[in-house]
Structures are given as structure tokens and as C-alpha cells.
Length: 313
Image (cartoon, rainbow, N blue to C red; front, side, top):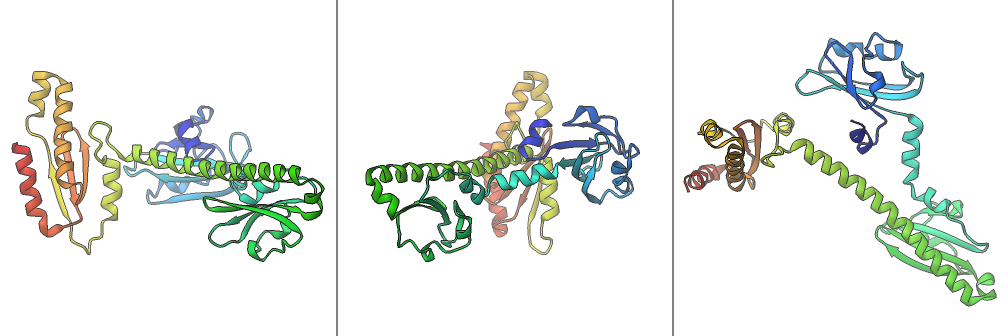
């Protein structure tokens, strides 16, 4: 739970049972607390009466340590537990500010007579600058007549290093060296910031994939099925197919569960090869599968025949 909390950038995750008691989560010392433990937790008591509720709480001192926290809670799909997340407001602000271009650039040290600008490559609007008065201006509109300027586009940003002529002429070689160093430093900071954002996005996508994927077959799992079935547009045409595997018990009894798992994987591969381009294949558990076809509905009979031929071969 602590790893999941870090991955989704929250401080706490708590699991409540149907009576409002914490029985698991990322902070073991809170286990056993309930909606009757204090005023802050009592705020969520309406959750016990209405499983359709999702509740959020503004910044409030928590029950155990009087630490200022923001909490949100909802029921899971099965309605047999509640999931609550919490985050400290100061940490939330720090996380947001940490990735702002303006803060990254503002913290860069510069020599007298030198400035660094970072602008959006599409809009040309300055998003960060060592001289904060230039933030919000178009980079092309900034007066650079008394400066020597070097610009470099790096991904989504334009990085510019400006040196006043008077300082530049005092030591041209040194000025060129300093400009090159600062331009490289600024570019590296932008690359680092972008790579950090992309890494966080990748980790979250990877987590979501794991959460919705059956480990044995790599089909979608029951959780993904429940999400998708609730999103289906009932005004449009789609096909629902329910399937199971004949002979799985005999395979398990005769050759062992490893052989049974191979049979399940082979059947799942056959389903995915036949239907994945036209919909999704879900493993509901054991040998039970569901296929939901949302594309090429008029071709379903042909798809089904092709699937049966794969099974027979």
C-alpha cells in the first residue's frame, strides 16, 4: 500500500470495512480506527448508509495526530469495502510548484549582466526567467538590442541565454564559455523536468495496466470488465459473448494445474487473436471469459466462424 501511495502521489491510503473500521492501508498505526473515533472521521459516517456516495473533506486536523490533511473516500465496485486517500496540503502545493518551469529557472544562479529565459516552443510565451518581470511576455517581443543572445529549442521549450554587451566585450572567450555552460545547464534542467513528468506518467500507466490485466492470460480482468460494462453506450449496437473452457477439470486432474494453466492461456490467445481487433476479451475467473465486440458488428458471424476454425485446428 505504501508503494501504491507513492506511485499515485498521495500520503495515505486506508481500507475501511462495511462497518467503518480501518483494517488495512499504508499507515498500520491507524488500523482499528473507525468513523466513531473522532470528529474528523465521523464526517464520513454517511458512507455507511449510501454506497453510491463519494465524499471529499477539506483541510482538517486528522483524528490520530491532529495533522492537517485532505481526505477523499469511495466504495469499491463490489461494495464490500471503502477506499480512502489522504494528502497533506503543503505537500500537494510543493509537488505542484516543484515541476513549474518558473521555479526551476528562478533557482538557477547567474552572473551579473546575464539572464536566462525559457519559453513555450508553440506559444513563444516566457514561462520562466531569472528576471521574473519577463514572465508572460512573448520571447520575440523582448528587447535584446544590448545583449548577445544564444537560443536553443529543446523539446517543448525554447531556452535563451542573454549576456549584456558590456560584459560580453570585457572577455569574449570567457563570455562564450559561460553562455555555453548556462545554455547546457538550462537545457539539462528542462530535459530532467520533462523526463520526470514522463516517468511519472509511464509509472501510472503501468500501474493502471497491471490493475486491469489478468496475470495469467494478459486478457482484461473482472475489474476492467466492470468499468467497461458501465461505460457501454446502450444506444449503439454491440455484441456480448460468454465462453468457458471444456475439459479444464480433466486436464487439471490428469496432468496437474500447470497443464490447466497452459490450456487457459492457449484458449485466451485464441480468443484474443480472433476478437481483440474488434473489441475486448476479459477473463472473469477460472475458465470463464467474456468478449465484448464494439466494432465491425455486421462481420460478427464471420468472426465467430473464424474463431471456431481456430479452436478446431
